Image 1: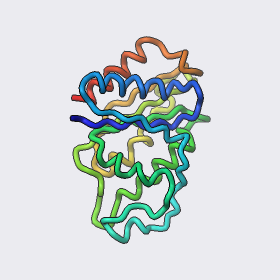
Image 2: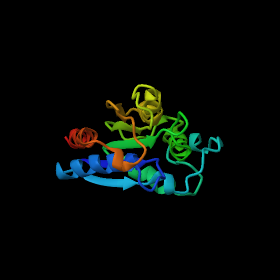
Image 3: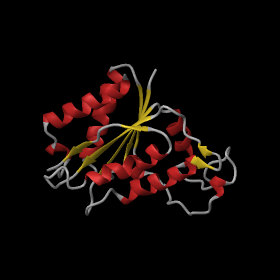
Image 4: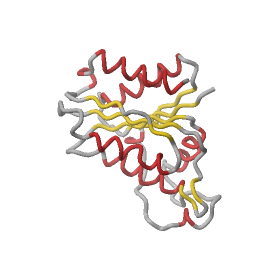
Length: 184
């Protein structure tokens, strides 16, 4: 059974990012995948301290003890990861950036500790209508996973949003398609 992890970087109460990730996960679940939603923006995840302890021993991950600690095993166990963020002032949220920085612990002294064959895809939501304007933010979300050996799928970028209720049926349909494709 395919395991898919959805990681959300939006702390907004009515988050369009969260709604798209959940829609993709529900479609994947309907297609037979095991899914889990992680609300990273509401977790206590500190930024990387640059201590390099993760580089000293291939068997040890990050020495920090916060809400990221149990996520390392979940990330490694997943076959696919959907990671999403709204765009705030031209960038991904600060909360998801701390999560991304902590992926550095997967790069041990002998190379990647990440299970091979993992798929990852980004979901970006933004108020600005031009969906190409912040496409580089999708690359930021999945770049660390790619560096660690994961394959990267085409991002889902949805513009013109200010609340989850602004999502159009075609955007929700695209999220469903994304989820089903990851479940294959």
